[in-house]
Length: 261
Length: 252
Image (cartoon, rainbow over the protein chains, first blue to last red):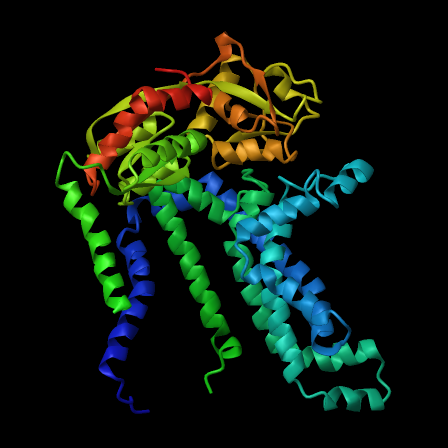
């Protein structure tokens, strides 16, 4: 494949655009504290935060699949008044500042929240400051990524396979499990990875709704933020680790989420 | 024609403040950014308003956060003109980096108080009560001044407790109590005063108190030294001190 000529101003602006992303990465690499990195990355609080991040982000992804796939199905196939409004409202977290999401979660599930009040008085369940809160916050901000990706997959799939299966006597559940699910599997996979990556990076809603509790809500992004003030070298080392992890996600999704043809 | 007139007007307006900065008798003008501990939010907004209403050409913008975050930002090159910290430790970080112009001056002190729900429904009377198992207690993280002070006070009182959360700054602690998510939090007296309708303060006796000292300094890299030092002088002068008094700060 031969390179096509690019107008000079465009080439210049494109270089600037690329520099915006590459310079911070270069900064992390240049300042990477090789000597202290191992110690910083294996310190007990960082390992605890990493383990917790893994648990909360995977739980959020599982919850998003469980609840998000049915929601995507409704969005792709159902029709009822108000559907578009509901769809818009449930995708809001993608553009909402996460802190605002955290405040909204507090007002709903906090101790005085419209649902939280009832949970506390009837069952003695308090969500804020618990790992459940961290999972809920991550799910809140990350699930829309899965829903939209799966919905797009459902809309673009060939419905005739489902009709054929149905005409051969398969029940609804059988059709879903044996025909629909395999057909949207690439979208589900891409959506789940995006959702997981977003959940892993979640900060604003978590700190607002779940607080900062080492061992139960202090995830890696919170640990990085706090480390920056006391142990900057640990923050840089961690940042690079999270960045490499994100890079792996992008490479894994390269073909599925961003088709090259 | 109209456009030309507007352009001339605009260029005059833009040119005026610049020429006045070099003239020491003209009123101060331009913009400065003040980095201040989050417990100073109300006090500094008010001081800023008073200063800018006296000198309409001056603009003051603020960056409030935990002193440790602000110190980190300044050391990493954030464009700050003035830094006011809630403790000496974080001011020293900035001084050690050679970024302070002259030296820092302590302009106020603050004391700790226990913030509880309005009317104190849980009957919290002392630091020792915070160890009660039926209470949700939040503190500031140990890396921010309010968190360190809270731990010192608890230590003096001989109380050990596991906070429900370690918030990123003292205002976050106050908000968790004000929102009803926490039953109690250790904050500054001034924080309780600023949220008088949303929380009640429980006093901490003298023997368990920790006094927070607030140093302020102009920064060497400030682009507007004149307005920066005016802000600090105003803060240390009678007008600034009156505002600080009215909000519950004590004099150093």
